[in-house]
Image 1: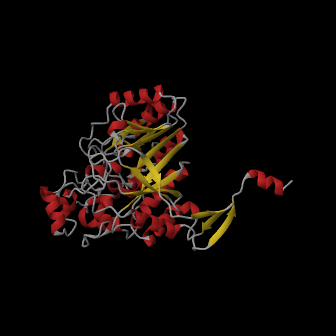
Image 2: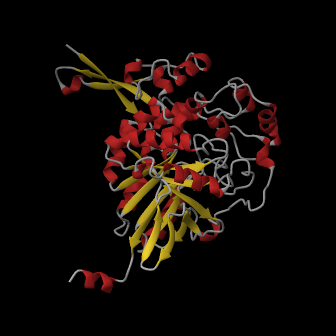
Image 3: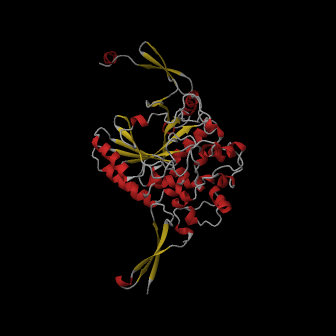
Length: 436
C-alpha cells in the first residue's frame, strides 16, 4: 500500500515561478515504487513559513487588496518581491494620496525609484500622509530641493573604492556592496545614487570574484560587512557561495550582513535561510529599524528565527525629523528590540544625500534623545549616536557632556539626573603611596 508524504521545498532565486513547491513522495514496498513529483498548485496554509496573525494589519490589507492570494503565496518572499508597489496607480489604489505625494509620483519627483513590498504597505496609514512609516517610503516634492552640504555621494565612498563593490575606509574592515537592489526603497537612502538603478549591476560573479580577491590580498582585513542594496534579496545559493568564499580567507575573522529585509519582508527569514547562515559563525546581522510601528508579530518571528539560529542581532536606526525624533518613540523602539534579542547598536544622523533636508534634524536633537535614554533605561538598550563624516571621515560618536571639568586630581562628572560627582584621577604614584 502506498503512503503519501507532503512537504515543502524552496526554489531560488525568484524567477516568476512558484517559490514553494509541494513534493509528494509516494512510498511503496520497494525503491522502484518510490517516486517524487512536483505539485505546482496551492497547498494548505499550514505549510506556510509564517503563520498569519489573526486580525493583524497584513491580514486585513491582504483581504482587501489581494483577496485571491493564499497564505502560502503571501508568506513567500519571492511573491512579495514580484508584487512590490512601484507605480502611482498601484499606490493610489491603496492610499489616499496628498497632492504633494501625487505630484512627486507623477514624474515630477526625484529619480530615486518607488518600491514597497505588499507586507510593508500593509503597515502604512492609508489616510495620513504624516504617518511615520509612510513618510519613509512614499516620495514627496521636497526630494527635489537641494540644501547646503548635500551631495550624491556624501560619505565619499567612491574615492575609497579600490575595486568595484569594495569600500576600504578603515584599516581592518571593508564594506562589500553586493547588489543595488532592495525590496523596499527608503527615501533617505545613503546610496540613492546607485541603489535601484539596475537589478543585476552588482550581482555578477566576475565583480564578486574581483572583490573577494582584493580582500584575500589585504591581510589587514579581518571584518567584512556585506551590504548593498540588501544582501538578503539574493538567493540562498548565492549567499552561501559568497559566505563560503569569504570564510575560507584565513585573515577574515568575522562577517556581517546589513539588511532591512526582516522589517520590510519578514517572509525572507525562512528556516532554510537561517540553517544556511548558521553554518558561517561568527556571522552578525545588522538590521535597519526606524520606528516602533515596525515591530509586528511577523517581524518578531523573523528575528526569533535568526536569533534561534545563533546569529547575533543588532539594530541601526536613522534619526528622521518628524518620524522618530522624540524620546518616547525611541525608547519604545529600543525596548521592543531588546525584547526581540536585537541589541540597539547605532543611531545615525541622517546622511546629507541630495533632497534629504526634510528628513534631517539638528545634531542637538540626537544628543537630547541619548541624554533622555541614558540612565532611564538599560545601558545595552541605548545605541551609540554617530555622524558619518562627509567626505569619508568615518563614524564619529556624539555624546552628551558627562565629564564637566578637572578640579586638581579630580574629574567632575555629571550623572543622568544632573548631579555632580568627584572621581579621583591622580597619578599612579600617588595612589601607590596611599596603599603601601
